[in-house]
Image (cartoon, rainbow, N blue to C red; front, side, top):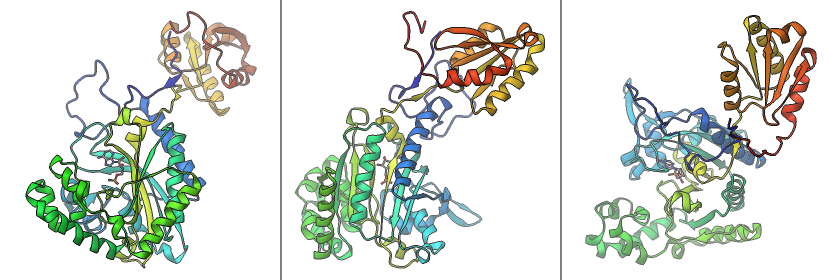
Length: 453
Ligand code: AMP
């Protein structure tokens, strides 16, 4: 019988696909919104856990905000002319209040920061979060309508030290989960007046080519010209290639921030590439912008693992004081596709197999004793055959199977089977919990010829 030791990326998929032989349900999940089945959840937990640990090591604490927020929060924070707000929000009215399923986490975190007057209690706030986000995008590999983000916000520090620290820590986190050579792309889009001067120059440079641009970019020429740089439309490629770069327009203060950020990243030994055309899709960014890509073989070249940047104006925009901030968000499904993390497939440590009429109650007691010792244990309550119970024990990845027949109960013993070492012995009932725990804690012996059949 095959014992599964590790859950590997199932055909590198992060999302539970339909199982072979699955039946057709009367009602199916919404397109682009996926079930994460228990068979896959171990890898999700592993990446979420690695993320939480890496943020906690930097002094970040977890924040949980509602999945639903008033629509004006996103319109104000993300920007009216962004793709997310224009096309991708799940918005509805409830008792006449316009509400939206959150498409990202920063706006809600900043709303909470302002609403709870957090700036009054601490000079620097470091929060991380994880949870579902909702965007009505065209679903494809690595792009879903309900997807999960891991993110963090550092509010109250103008950088560039905390910018460099964040980027460096993210590279470390990605390496922790087996994404070996993540590529950091870095840009600065300056602050308000830098961007105003750049927008003017960009509009002047692109206007003569207006007719050649895609319809979206033609419209953006007047509404939000920076977003043209983000266009993937082939018609816009030439205009983007010849457009002036924002780095040439940085004010003295913006340039000093940019230069210092790069010096600090160099000092940390964190490699990065300057990408002067990097603008990202959300309007709230100021100064530092970054994206990290990687695992191109699994994700394709265009797919970003995570993105972030500074948003020095948002706290004030949402009614708070003038407080600078920086944050990022990573797509959890994409991290899972890219990550080489393996997790144990074992669901329980011990399986208790009662056989015979009077064995169920003693088996329940034995299983409870085992759990009280801190081990994971399932007991068969189906009255199944020995063969079926052993099959179940192996399928659950149990290390030990404790067999309890009428004779064993009468004699005060248990048959203990080490399912990895393929050895069996009779153990006194009084000793069995400690003995089973010792086997569970012992290393799995190397596979023998003929195992796994
Ligand atoms: P954004 O909030 O747009 O800056 O995106 C940050 C990260 O979230 C991206 O780099 C992706 O990894 C992930 N992401 C954004 N949109 C989606 C989506 N529709 N499906 C899956 N992941 C997404």
